[in-house]
Image (cartoon, rainbow, N blue to C red; front, side):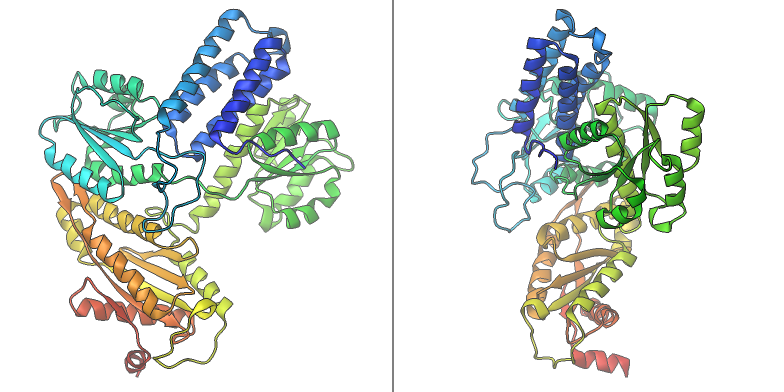
Amino acid sequence: MTDSPPSSIDDRLYVLRTRWEFYVAEGRFEQFIEFAVAVNSLAEHLNRMRLPGLVRVCEGLENAALARLGQEDTHPLSEQDISALQRQLDTLMGAVASAKPHVPDRERRIDAPVGSAAAPEADWIKPRAVWLISAPGQADLVEALGHQLRYFGFQTVELPWGAEPPVGDRPLAVLFIPASGGMQTDDLACITAIRGTCPASQLFYLGVASAIEPIVELMRAGIDVAIPAEEQSARVLDRILDLVQNIEQEKYRVLVVEDSRVAVALIQRTLAEHGIDSHAIRDPGTLFDVLESYRPDLVLMDMFMPRFNGVEATRVLRQMSAYSTLPIVYLSGATDVGMQVEALRLGGDQFLTKPFNPVLLAAVVKTKIERFRETQRSTRLDGLTGLLNHTAAKSRLASLVQQLGAPNRHDEQSQPTGQGALTVAMIDIDHFKAINDTYGHPVGDQVIRALAWLLKGRLRSSDLIGRYGGEEFLIALPGVNLDQAVAVIDRIRSDFGALPHAHPGGALHATFSAGVASFPMFDAAADLTEAADRALLHAKRLGRNRVEAATLTSHLHSVA
């Protein structure tokens, strides 16, 4: 059993401040290690909360702490070092305080689905404001971006280049829109000034040349994201919407194979500080049974154990397809470089020596797990939208249908409700080729992403949303009958038609058509998608920008 980590930003700040005060008072090396771990844990939490400005400030403190970690005989630190770290800690505390807006508790969070009841209160209410700082001649683009951002619930403030920033709460993001000729001499000074005023905000620069030198200059001045000119309007909304989506993910799981009780206690404490679940075994002979039941994301493997060593255990695991890519990190007190190279060559992913640095251990574990999970996700998710891809969406739909069973077909008037209902919709963006041909593929991609965002915002987390291919989407709504689904999809259709899509010349509007089919009128996954697709084609023939429901009669006629 491990201790629960702090659950909120305020809790983590309290732990951080308390550990620092203990170290300043007593100056013990292990207290400084705990302080460094607390900084690292806070940085990770801020990253999960999608607060990149605060992550930057926190990482500055973390780097300063790690640079002074040293060995036990270098502590306590000098008064000069303590004062320097104190200033950085005060800067972090001030940045958090200034970035957290004063929003009444009754207001709905920006990342709650539009039209839904208020989401449960979290420990952070994100700013809603976005500043658009533009050079002369960019009024059309500013107006289009502002219209688009306001549609998704953001509050926009338009400022001329070099203007004094408004007083009050700092924004979630600042968009710098330079003159069409590219970056000017005074641009960097303006960016640096805004960075000083808004330390926790995400700063975007739209329209940078695709070359490394100007992007490096912009980042040194304080820019977080530099977007090339050919992609500026297509990517910016996607990036800002991404900021208000907290990362909700399954807890990381680490299996510790280690025969030392002291080492296990230290490892599990370090992992718990970062919200990572762990399970430890002392006997590697039980490895297979535990892997099957615990399903870890990573194995921390002691190099030398009773009966056989970590390399031998890894070689066996790598011969099994289920564990051929599972990350394995070795732990050992040995410093023989040749042995370490051999261990990595035989299937390990990294080698850490004991006594381990807890910050480095946590960083290695998180990085390896994130890459492992990303590799797994990449086989299931569409790269452009983050939705399920064609194969994964079809597989998920088949699973939903299988869970419902396959009763006898009902007549057309049957409208099942509750757990026995399932409705499928096929959605296709109207005249999409014309959008690509007229405005370019980056804008076309943004239209697809915007519809994906709208579907995720309007539908439930239990609903299936997939990109079926190109500009076509597959939706499945469990527990929703045909009439209810038609109403839901039609409301989304109306909202999508009103959504502006910004491009350098202004804004465009797009529409979609949809076909809807329900279970158990069609009692197999393939029949549902085929019927919904035929209804979609019917909607196209009737003039597009509409939702049509499939009927059993029309399906029988099409088959005959």
